[in-house]
Image 1 (cartoon, rainbow, N blue to C red):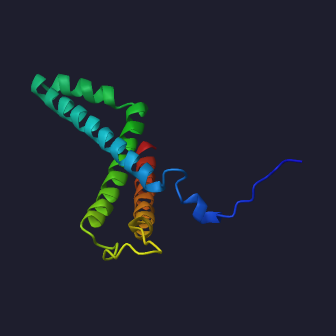
Image 2 (cartoon, helix red, strand yellow):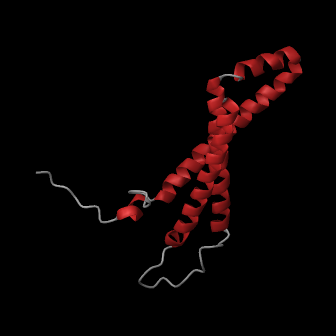
Image 3 (cartoon, one colour):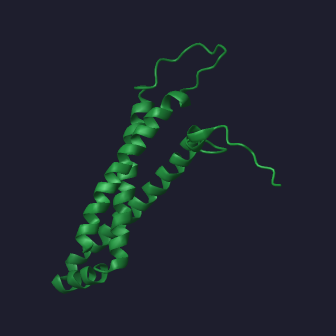
Length: 144
């Protein structure tokens, strides 16, 4: 007989984010997606600057980047842009105090702003997921 623990949290337990909370993982992913976008931006500047070397240099770089490996990379950059953009809008709304309510007195039972932010976070991630699916379908049709 195995000692099994019953899951009393249900679906809300899936959205809780574990030990640190889902907002901490969103923060880490926001930073990573920002670094990925920065790396793409620097590569884009480098390749665009190769036009100075003439049409042959430009076409050699374009031939180098026209591989399935870089097509997958372009899709990952799109995913990073979609997540980073939507999450950035959410962060702006939270930092400006919209959609999280007015601050209250610190009296028991405490009302945490994270509990007010969670529906906004879920809505932002659903919008980002829809954008990613639509963009993924577009990339799939481009690759065929």
